[in-house]
Length: 621
Ligand code: ADP
Ligand code: ZN
Image (cartoon, rainbow, N blue to C red; front, top):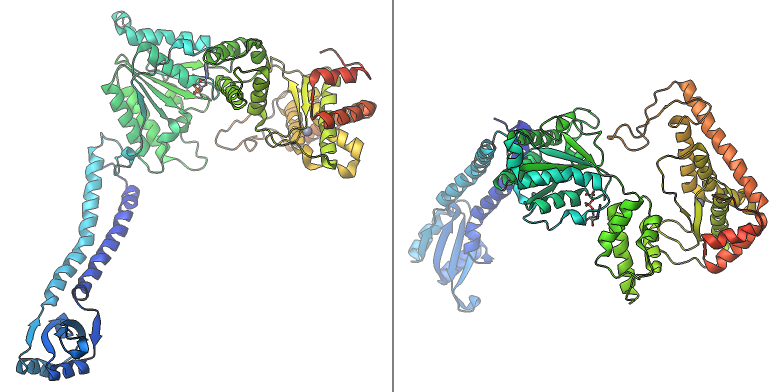
């Protein structure tokens, strides 16, 4: 018997509650029987006797063992119409019966005792019967399951379990910029189309392929393209949909999914976000999760259950393979891993070409410009970018997408919705100084990225923004580049200090300071860029079960901890000093730039550098 008592209790609870109410309902309705039947008006026993004397009473029905009488009477007081009146009778009124007899009044006693006994009995039995029936139902269901932990009730079935697309309509040409991953899959397409080629030589095709890559890099798209190219159905489900509140539901979904897949083989089964079910088991943080483990076990069982060459290929996607349970990665399961990277310049260009096909873009725009401006954008971001630009174009009732819309769309994707500009005020001046501070430090330090524009138009949470053109290669950053970034980030607060004085600095720099601290800390603890030496003292996000930041496990002594703090302070102090100096030395041009910025709201990078160059030379980057 696979049904645990915990489950049993869980499921029988609603039955008990429902049973109770239904039972109560029956009970009430039995005792109401007499009321339903009968008149709303009442009279006293005394008056009833008077009515008899007057000869107005035509008929008496006795209920409830002679305690209640329903009297049919007619008389001038009753408007000369026969009316039913209820009378409560005293406990012993034997003389009444005699009186009725002598007055020749029709008398009937209703054996209520009996009907009510029947209903009481039924009422009493109803609840246990319901419970027993419920339990029997549960056990039957649980034994039906193919040895699994029971499909308790039909909850597993009530929601859409998985999607099935008979034809995805997506081909490899729709997927761009991830050519290595595509190549890996061409073989699988060949297998799905001509399995004999492989089976003839005794080759086994992998049952499972794991796609690893950050969100929006095209993992789903690629899986669909495989199904589309091979012309086989595509089943998909997301790992987060497996994990339900009730133990056993996820497992039953896995079972259903594979049952359908087997009926439709050859086919592709796509499991998105597999980390939601497939995390390492038994790590114990936050308590065990029965449901997830059962679901994972079921998934492993199903994957072992079908032969390698049945034509079902399971493709799973995750953005981190390192947290997956080792059992998932064993041979015969997801033994192949294909990583899908965020596209580089050429990749972005290729993706833009795919998505520009059905859009009207002004001929003056080359997609290269867009690709160059969007380092770090995923395929989904790029698709979204062109779509946003198209929406903006339509809103302006223009015929073609121009660079304006593209720019606006890029800004929007990176920094959020545009707000309304501030009205002229002291705080607007302060924000202008803050932003010009970032921009001038960024411009005058050699290792900093170029300023693309400075603006006072709010966006998302930010009330002013300085945009930098990111360099293409963000993967290797030198020590002086990090320091330059720290100084750039400090530039806003430093300018506030110098221009408005220490007492006037604002909370506006809190985000900047967070970044500063985090960069300085990483220099010391991860990159070996302090005088503590080339030690890795903290690793990034080691434990996926804890929130970011909480995970930094201290693998060092308290003395080192003190040194780390000293070093972080030292780095920030040094950068802060240098930043203050840059601001002081360039106060004149800063004032001019602030006036211009308040007037124009936005200054482009070119113009910004040109003005600075009139006062001091901008380093060539
Ligand atoms: P993931 O599954 O990796 O999170 P998706 O496959 O769902 O990402 O991508 C979302 C959308 O982004 C796709 O439908 C497609 O329009 C676009 N996209 C993402 N990557 C690419 C790519 N390499 N080539 C073309 N379009 C892409
Ligand atoms: Zn700032």
